[in-house]
Length: 495
Image 1 (cartoon, rainbow, N blue to C red):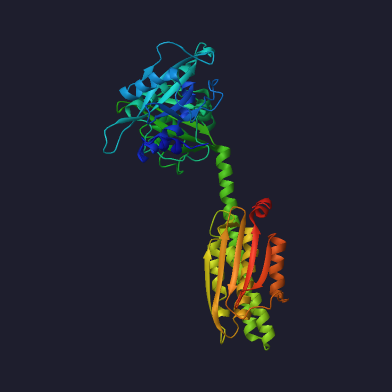
Image 2: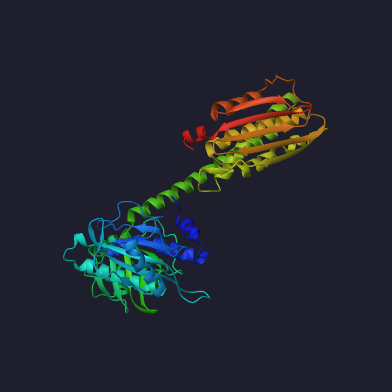
């Protein structure tokens, strides 16, 4: 399905600022639909004097009129004149008589979406339509009347460019309140004129046992807040209804998320809507996740430190060895441990248990510098291509395998001479292919080393990563090792 941006840009009549404005408005589509108890559809003009739907939101507290998705559809003939009039006049246009949609009587309101601010004068960039189902008409409750009044005031703000407010914070945290979670209506002085049952319940859980209506929300919150305790710095701005902001209110072990939407009449503030939701459990889960992430990072950090200690001990032991064979074995072990330590060091720096393997391998390559500096050997290492992001359980064996291959290429392929070792990574959606190529003396075709390093590489690539590995001599000179790892295997294994 095309995104809102794709649909808007496809019409060729909107700027990037227009698209951002429409995105903000569409993000509040659920709020508008719930307040109006109606379907909300957002339209933008086309190049042939028509309109196309770019967003649609169904109400959560009423039956929808549109059982099929209409995003991407052109405006229907029975609505076209009304939508065009609202767009061209910049005024809200209501249907003169009930509009029948699939044998259901409806009432349609067309609201021009006006963008204001910047250096340009306010202008219509689209139209929002409200489709109310009259087939379910019943005597409205006080809550429904208040919700509808709030919706009408927001529609009026949309038509004058006062809503959405581009200064309001974007990307609300998980658990952002909706109208059905709890709604408080404030007048211009911050006095509560209406509180839904869910809103009253939320404040009761915080410790306020009286009625909210008729009370100053600032005074109510002041009574609730524990003394000598820090609180959200944006809370005063939110509870006074003066700015479109969000804040958390905490008391008695309960956390209620608040979102304020100031109401304006042609720029003059006339009150506010305060949405509230009990997010105690959500905040607890978030805190547990933060604690868990911090613990995991600390574990990786300590494992890295321990591995580096082991590598240092192996290096010391290697220097004190009396035989070349023992020294070489200890040095190889030291490099293997250091390669694993690099992966844990990278994991200790981030929240995700995935690693940027390009960064890891750049650090792993430095581990072979000691080998490259061996007497009578001058090796230059180069890497190209992209490994991408890999899960930690696969980054470790791949880093260790590549350390072995590069080390072998320098120690054996380029022993006593000057040359290059090139590592080429090629990643697609289904495979990761890596080639390690050197310009050394090469192997006899069909013959592969039988040493510990070769056995380690085979075990890591074939056993742990489910991949394939092949050694062959490059035409002329040198050896090339080709590794192919199926990424689907990684995904099935829980990456």
